[in-house]
Structure formats: C-alpha cells, structure tokens
Image (cartoon, rainbow, N blue to C red; front, top):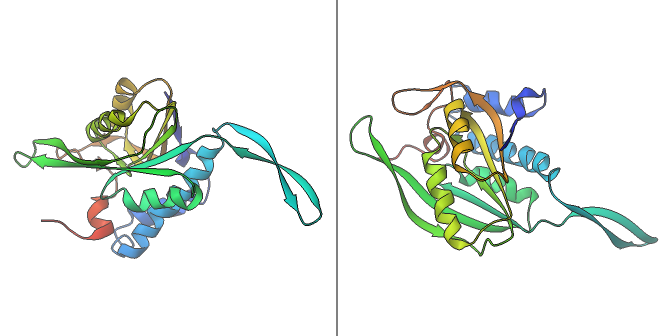
Length: 216
C-alpha cells in the first residue's frame, strides 16, 4: 500500500489543518465544515495525478485542441456522518462521479469498550471502478475495514483510494494489513497515538460533533 502524508509538504493545506485543530476556531461549525470540504478539494486534486489519462480533442471557436483527461470511472463513498463535508469536497472536483454511502458507528458497551455497527449502505455497482473512500478520522481502522467489506457486496473495484483528514499511526498500520495491494492511502496528517477511548491524539476532537453538533 502506498501512503501519501500531505502535511509533509508546505502548502495551503496546512492552514486548513491549523484551523480544524484549533480550539479557538473549530467551534464555528460552518467554518469547520468548510475546512474539511477544502481539504477534500485539495486531496482530490492531488489524487487525480494518479489516475489513467488519455488525449481527447475538443472543438473551440477557432479550431481543435487536444486535452488530457482521466478515464477512471469513479465512485466516491463516505461513512456517515462526519464524512459528509469531506465527501462534498471531492464531489466539487469529481462532479461526474457516482456515489456510495455507508452508515458505520461505534456502539459502546461501556465507557471504553465498543463495537462497530453497519446499518445502511447505498452504492452503485463497483466492478472495475476506482473506489474512493472518504472518512475524515482514521483511528483504529475498524470502521473503515467494515465499511469496505460492506461496499464489496456491491462489486470488486479495480483500484481503491482511502482519503482521511487525520490518521493515527496505528490506523495506518492496521489498514495496511486488511486492504488489498491496489490501495492508496491519502492523509492530510498522521498523528502518533490513540487514547484510551480510541480517539486520535493530538487529533482535533469528534469531527461529527464539530461539524453538526453533539449527539445523545
């Protein structure tokens, strides 16, 4: 598995990350959602460099112009609910892509123990397509693994891209063991550890709550 950590480059992306992490800024839900969306846009641009391209000729008012465009049939998928603004950022650039949605959540047995539940999936046929899974927080990797398993009931993609805003090193190591070799992992940042609640440290908190409000 190839892993891209975009925070290793000095780009505008790091400003969006600063605002997502900052306790002084992230309380503005609209700005939080927009920053997640903007990171999705930047990541979509970087990811597009890995696609297969061919030359097409386009008619202009004055003649014909050759343009190289990608040929990959894309399906952009997301995991509810925190993934929605991230997903939207990808759709802003991959506007002709098909879409898939999976509901995965932590069902707590007590304060520290939980299991991942999958309750909903809506997806087109995935056979031979390029599947992009957008999930802003890659903590343990368990929900991502289960979501991918659910998506595979809809077909076998030719290529898989995993896109995340912040991943833990543990999560990165885990997905390397359970995803196929034709998978590429994209991260805006990789953080060193998880706490006892399996939240990424230093991370940014609960992305779903910051984007849409606290749940009960």
